[in-house]
Image (cartoon, rainbow, N blue to C red):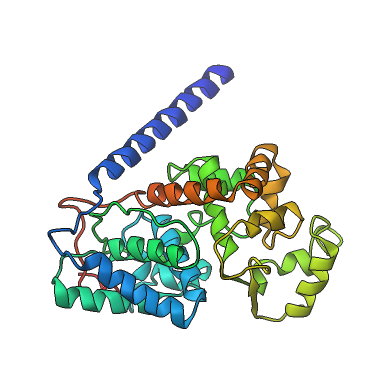
Length: 327
């Protein structure tokens, strides 16, 4: 009886996975490259100009825009819910603890303002996020790619829904696979998208346990290179705040130094270094250090796949004229 119960449970889980993957495939089919070619011909140009202006003034904004797209897609799908402001009766996603360091909102606002002037109520906030992430990536050395568009915006944003949907900095490979898998992404996609950590910064609080409170003896994480630990303790005193680059070698260049750092036991977050502890993810990590071109092409493909998670298309959803306010 117990064995039959386990088999039945596996069948239900498999069926759910098949449905989820089929839904993701339909979502990708409903999105189209060149969606705004006739509806708003200047759309992609306007967004690219605003992103370029922002990144040239502050290169760190590039990482912020890519992260915004990621955090949007992993909660309620790619519906721009992460852009909605909190209201007196509701705390929105952007004000949840995992999103406290998100940045780039003003870039989306600037692009959206120009888009509304050019083509009123045509280009969704969700598509602006997808295009902005692509443009930001290209500006820091990543591969440019075509973005299938046609997403529409949601009007619901709940801070509590970030729980369990966004991977914590302490996640194991098993936990990462569960979270990414629930979005229709594979383990390979997970390792690839983790490469976004080759740019940007992390708050000291996201990894301070590895420096001061690791394990039963509250010591330092033995899997971290001792010289790296020493450098980090200087930058992040115990109990202090601040941020440090996720990739200290080339923090504003989209390259494979993130993976090289993991191989050298210099992954900053526990979830980064965990990729070396699992044989299958470790093989992919090492593979990317030896083939940067493969990583670049894989990352572009994974971004397109991620950008189709739970999208609203057709008559579903809406097009918000102000990305911060529900319509």
